[in-house]
Image 1: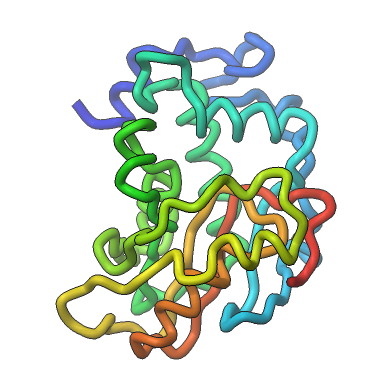
Image 2 (image 1 turned 135 degrees about the vertical axis):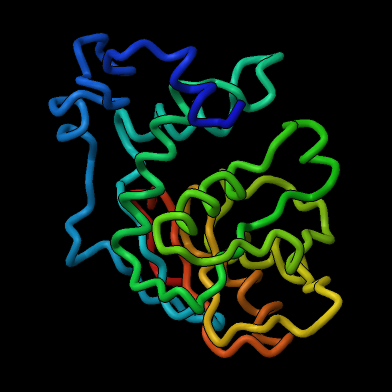
Amino acid sequence: MSLNDLIGFFVPRRCANCGDSGLGAILCRRCHDKLPWLDPNQCSQPLPLGLGRTVAALALRDDARTWVHRFKYPGRGLVGLDPAAIGVARLLARAAGRRAPVRAADRIVPIPLHPRRFRQRGFNPAALLAREIARLHDSRVETNWLARVLDTPPQAGLDAPSRRRNVVGAFAVVARREPAASRVWLVDDVTTTGATLGSAAEALRRAGVREVMGICLARTPDAHPV
């Protein structure tokens, strides 16, 4: 059974947020429209550290914060299978992906989890989002190019300089051959200062990738260039 089939089996054809008729969609029009969507003309954020820009669909507040948190941290025993949260995350991934000028020749690379954290969580949220965006653009997901080689503390609660220091050297390219793409889109769930994306971008650029961009579901309201 595919993930889409699983979601369709468990999720009633009602809005996952308010319970009203969703007409087959995961969110009804009212709940969809009240999400804190970023202006398409302002959703792109330039960042240094070898990262060209990041594109996000939402500001991380209100219902957006609730859904992202529920997607990333499902209830105990679900191992990532909170069908409603996955359905909303897929919707948001497509929205973010439509704001990014991805080409078929580009590669989509999810921000990896350290193996210990992957074992604890049971799935990598960024990988699920990356696959959704790749399907949207008929591109390829490369889940084995990057590895998280340092088990760094969470970024939450750190200021911008501390975030940068926290992820220095956290990522490495582990592909057997040099990554064969001139442009890579890094996918993560949330960006604040861009430190995590920037550290991963540096590893890819050292391996020969010429241009690295970012796609995230949401950007924290106080996000700013590092």
